Length: 273
Image: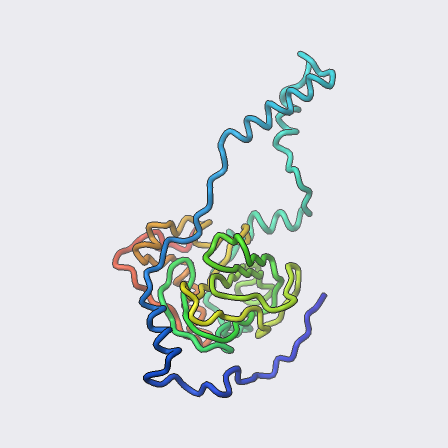
């Protein structure tokens, strides 16, 4: 269902003109920026023996059902490899190839600054771009919500992802993660418009927030799926190519770009998957 909302610009902070020296919130923000960030996005690996066990189980069931020695192992293998959950061909294709076809174009036409309703302090570029601050995050452009995870997201906080429907980056995924709270009523499948609020920043969150190019694969970032980033890069503050691209787009839209704090080149040297 189309989400219709008022797009008239509104000052989100009528009482917060500018930060001043001695402001407790600013001091907290400074402490937040000085934190040591722990490696993120670790997930347990699948047990490699599971596919073999599943195949053996299928063969055994076929034998008990009357297949016996004449049971066709090729057919059994095909049954074992068949997906257990049905998905529409269009959705499956999008999930499988969407991130590969994303051009990561830095072309602001038709898009809007996702930080326009927030007051933020830019931090490092890694898989995406890190910020600390307060306010709301809005949609860069028209699109559809593809993932929302408030618990067990694989990130130190929530994860929100949407797929852009138009502009130079149509088909690309954008994520907002870590210290964010999804807008009330936001659901997977909702259509959104440019400038529509999608999340609220949690003030003085331990890891701040991160925004960037998503992959459309569970709660993964483009940089992770494309092999541009790993936990070592996180520890060394290495900026991925996808992170640099998203930072450049933010700057082109009038927002504050992130900081490339890495001291050496790493996985983020190429935009190609």
